[in-house]
Image (cartoon, rainbow, N blue to C red; front, side):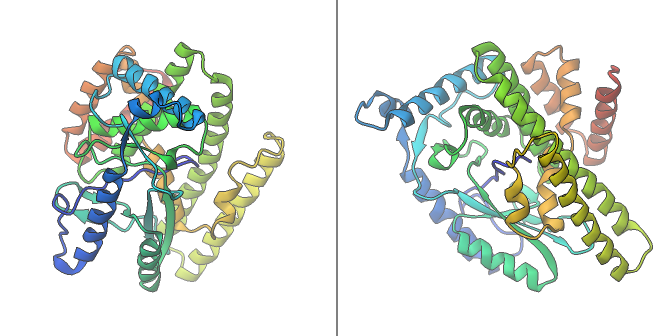
Length: 359
């Protein structure tokens, strides 16, 4: 997970039928309404770029998207379709808000299950108040809860997804990376395996952007510095998550576990302050993660989902000789395995990446 966005995957009511019956039809009706409004707001990027009356900076950035998207098709083997050839201004800061939940003494995510795409560790809402209402329901049930705004998402090629105004808040490099990430989701999606799907797309984003900047002469140094700091921050969070997992699995009583949980989050905040005020010389790009809400188990979930298997995909690209099309074929073969075998293969690939070995 990065500090900039957390994608989700949403389909229309006709495509996502709730496994739990009609009690959640209101939720799917909201999705359908939100998706229709988004599709209605689309404009062809070609038309905007050619219109000299439009905002020059918007035209420049959309032209950058066009160029990067074509590069990704040619160099990364990503889909050449109608997705991200249009633009939509939604007039709000996020396209959807995701709700994550986990038990107070566990890191197992609350699962949201759908007929066609399986179970996911989050549920998305087009309206923030609906997301907050759902979060409150889960809090009353005793869960730790996190609501996060999402500037980009994919419908897995069911629709021609547009570039959104919500994706424009960050640098050109981050914008390009998001396009790579979302197109990667259209290459492959595995039911009931959020960590696999997101780690794969996150790897395509990061490695693809590294190659793109090296070839096109973009701001590679600035991106590498940001990426390095992001990696350090994520490592702090994942280390905390690992220690908390040991706490929750230990034989100590619940009260002792709650106290240990609080100490671990306090230690995380202190470790971050030392990193920010020391090696980062005051760079405060991740302060918002601590100030937005009290840290809890649910706020840790996206990190594991997005970063857990990235080293495995790095090993797979290396074994594919750096050939992205061979890499995607290898990933598809991996995805065909039963879940337990797939996880075993991913762990072995991660081991190979660490020690530099080959099978």
